[in-house]
Length: 122
Image 1 (cartoon, helix red, strand yellow):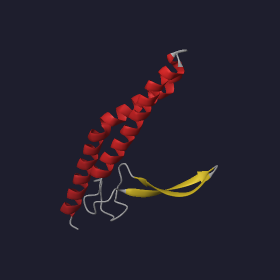
Image 2 (tube, one colour):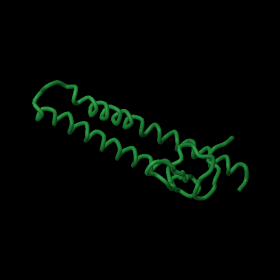
Image 3 (spheres, helix red, strand yellow):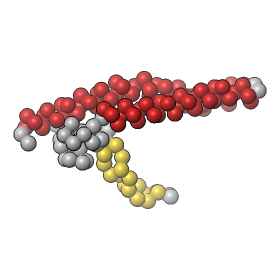
Image 4 (cartoon, rainbow, N blue to C red):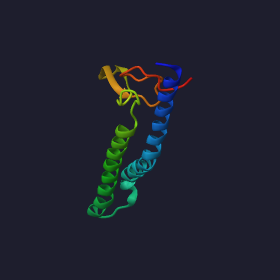
């Protein structure tokens, strides 16, 4: 692959990365608001427990919808331009109750974990 092709792939990936953030930004706000409401429901006062069901259900629904949309948008846009896979990397875990390795999404990778294409210009 020539230098121009490498630069085109990394430029396109950075454009997709920016587009992904623009697409999920509002949903991250909904997610934060949902968690804020869920955490503060107990502070709403000594009301009837049935009246707390509405804000609790709304917060849970907001959290679930926001998570679904963030995953969906990220999986659709945030892909390597060369192989069309989501850039992933392996991460090691060592701690109480957690020993092993897991695969996770790279947020700003140097190279694609699937095809090795350069995704960031230095």
